Amino acid sequence: MSADPLPSRLAVLLEGVLFYGDPHGLWGPLLEALVPSVHTVFILGDLAEAKRHPEHIDDARATLGTLKDRGINWYTISGDRESETSDICDLLFYELKDQLADGRLIKVKESNVTVAGLGGVVRGRIWDGLSKPRIQSPDELLAKTPPQEIYRQGLPFKKRSTIFPSTVHWLSEQKADVLICHEAPSCHPNGFAFIDELASALDAKLIVHGHHHLPYIDRLNNGVWVRGLGLAEVWRPQAPLSDVQRQLLRSGLKSLEENERAYRYLKDR
Ligand SMILES: [Fe+2]
Image 1 (cartoon, rainbow, N blue to C red):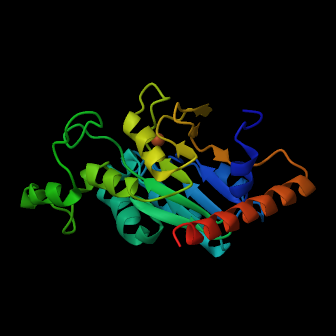
Image 2: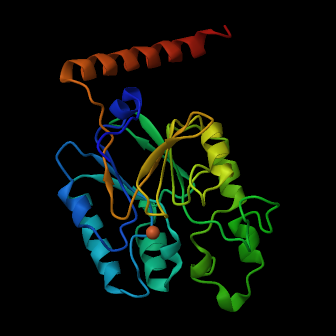
C-alpha cells in the first residue's frame, strides 16, 4: 500500500502511534519500525501461536519488555490465539493484564487521542454477532461453567478472548477517536455490522482491525474509516504534509478543540 488516503486531520492526530497487525510470533517488523518518534504501540491480538510454538510466549514477553525498556507505551487486544493454551492466557490475562485494552479506553496523552479496545472474537455459542445472544456477559458465562472448567477462578482459558454483548454495550456508551478490534467491521466479507454501529456510537473516526491478515483501507457507509492490517504489518498513520502545514493543522485542531470545549461549557448557561 503506497499511501494512506486517511484524512490529514486524523493522520496528524495519530502521528507517533504505531499499529501492529497480528504478530503470530513475528516481532522483527515491529522492532525495526521503532523510530524515536514512536511513543505508543497498539497490537491487534494473536501475539503467539502458543499451541504449535510454546517458545513464542517467551519471545512475546521479551519483545514487549524491550518496548517498555525503551519508554514506549504499548497495549494489545486479545485475539483467538490467546485462548489456545493456559500459558498464553497466563501471559496476557494475568502477567500483562495492565496492557490489555479489551473493553477499555486508552488515552494517548501525547496525541490527545482516545482509543477503545474490543478484543476477542465472535463465538456462536455465546453470541453470533447477529441474533439474540445466548449469554450476555462473562459473569453469566462463569455462573454457567462447570467447576472443573473454571480457570484461575475465572472463565475457562479457551473462552477468555470472546466478544460479549455486555462489553459492546459498555463501550457503546463511551466516546473514543479510534476503535481497535480483532474482528472486522462489515466492509470485510467476514465482518460484523455491530462493529460499524459500535464505532458510530463511540463517535470514532477510524477502526483498525486484525484477524484476517488482509491489508486494506476502506470507508463504511457511516463515514468511519477502516484499516485492516496484515500479518505482522506495521502501520504508522502519517499525513503527506510539510512541517509548516503540519504545524498549522495541529494549531488549527487545538483551537477547534478549545472552542468546542468553551462552547459546551457555555451553551446551556
Ligand atoms: Fe491472527
